[in-house]
Length: 307
Ligand code: MEV
Image (cartoon, rainbow, N blue to C red; front, side, top):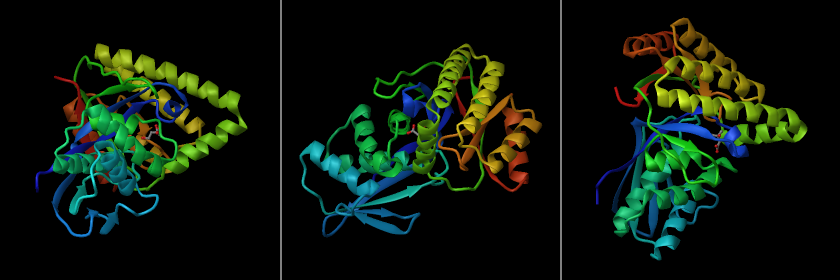
């Protein structure tokens, strides 16, 4: 009881949306921004107390992320509903492309399985969280629950065992938040509509994103930050082509580029939410963050790989 169970946010570096159509994508955990959950004795069954939302969810609530998650966990572990309250708090903005739903579900999954005394492996947690992700996102690829549950960089293809990879150096990123909450369910569904209207054109874009993702992976492994930045720019153009851009994303990307970022793109579902910029080094990272903040937006620093 009262032990804290946490899970990180995530950033997609390459391949969002195309990943829903079987193409590869690359994502990294954002370990500095986390959801955390802790349990205390409750009454009348299981309650998830989402403190930031000021909302409580029970296991019988229909079509809800946490009720679906709790039911899946109890079914998998053959347990009855406990009298328990799981408190939940998250540093991750909702509807921002940073994996808030996967992180909150993963933290709750860890708290509940911890209370029940069952040890779940990362792949089992990822699968349970995927059930909840379907409620939130409709037809998710599974990349968010994978990167969040494993908490490691992943090269991900839907339905395949996730691969990890070793970055050739430390990469410094800035995440900029447009402040526009966007539903991934909606942007994924808009892309699906565009694909139904013009399948040839959209498949061409997805093929191009696949090439960029694979080149991006090689450049990350070689520590070639210039190419990684170029690939991020190209990926962003293609995300605009498939219809998930937003004026505010362009604004933040322009600020980052004017502050010497090596590349920048939207990250996650798009239509608002966050962008991610690759900085040249730690100093440049601070400059980009300051420039975005001075323009009136929230910005965070993160990094991946070893120095
Ligand atoms: C959301 O973080 C990433 C998308 O590709 C949707 C998905 O993969 O489920 C937009």
